[in-house]
Length: 594
Image 1 (cartoon, rainbow, N blue to C red):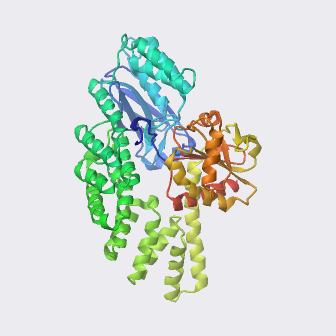
Image 2: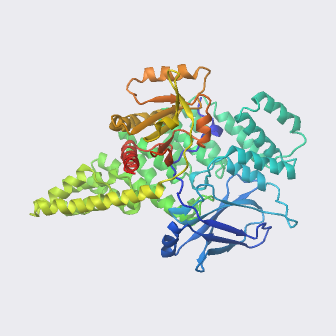
Image 3: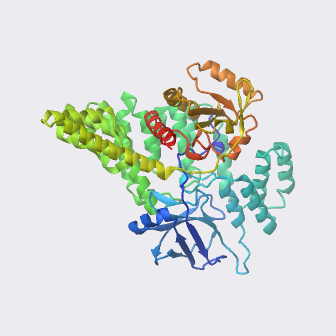
């Protein structure tokens, strides 16, 4: 009844850096216990920034043969005038690693391909599992901060290389067969037959206790109710607190609790388990805090999550210390924001202001933008106009030019007797700074990737080549009728479409992919008929060929194409409606201005 834990796509929002430098791994064939030298030369665009920062580091994600999650190892780099250099000795059990370089919040990931290193035996042969782990990495199924652009062909080649060297590796064989099934080169029945024929002669590197755990998890997916599902997950997480599936399990519990009307049961689970990730609490309290009777317990969960986020032991092994500190800062900011919103709903205005201001201080330019409006309105109600003005100025300068902040700026200064012309002139300067900051962010996020052509089909069966849209800014949204996050994102997408629907230079293509069912056209037609408020243009990628070219691994995924068809922005997952509308409009406007 509930979503299959092992088929859940990781949802995140990411952008591929436009610039990539050069990394050398020396020696070329590192062996166990050997010191590895990492040399990095940034692209000219990043060179000055990194030299000014000085605190440049490499992050090595080190994969062991039996572990599903890599260890993140930070390597400080020093600049010799030409290269940034550092040394690391990886644990003896490591078989494969990937590298990114930079500073927290601005890493060069080689355009989300990263740089790879394989460990070797003394004779120069890659150790067992090196190519296998490289193949898994090539599938693009890891969390955002070390997830590469998926390439099934490269992954398949890596698995084949592993099998040439180590033909008894059952895991590599299974993975290679899975790719053939996805490519429709084999049927599921043929794959099962092939696996059954070799299972007894090959060995798996997956520990027996992990196999037992996976079998137990599979049973939970058939739980008869949301409450039973959460019960099963709580028991499982108590038994396996360090399970590699923790992210998916906590996410599944929140999903079941919020969509299955089991918020009280979800709260009990979050209260009972000690190692709940702060990000999970943040996700859950957004729902829990909306229920009057549950707000006190939501506040308790938030306070406990903030304490945990500040503990070094809360850091996941696959996140470096510096990167975790940044992640924790953002999460704590979000928690303070939700806490402030709940306190405001409880009419505890003074406490709400404290939490909201704390959220702004910690969140910096990444804070939930509603924090500014909430805190400014509360400060004005408390007659604290000077504090309200200071926050309004800060928000406008950071690109949050909401009507409330602008009105507050004008009202407070005018009430102080300041000349209205001077007020408007200074306001224009502040808004200009905010716009420049937003533009700078957008420029740094532009992908500048080559055009990927293909042909979609209208609901009425008419083929439409994407090349026909050249000269227009194009927003592509890949979706499916069974995808809950896709459906949840549609109201905001409709509003964005309505804003630009009369602009002949903007094209929206909401493209159905990965549909489950024989008659895809009928499924989509029926869906649109049941949702008459959705009027954006809908297309179908009938054979899922175009979406494969785009390297999509989870939906919803959106792409913004410039007038030449080049991919400039990518968004995986969903954003809050207000944020999506603001950022989506900024992207379209930036591309129209090119």
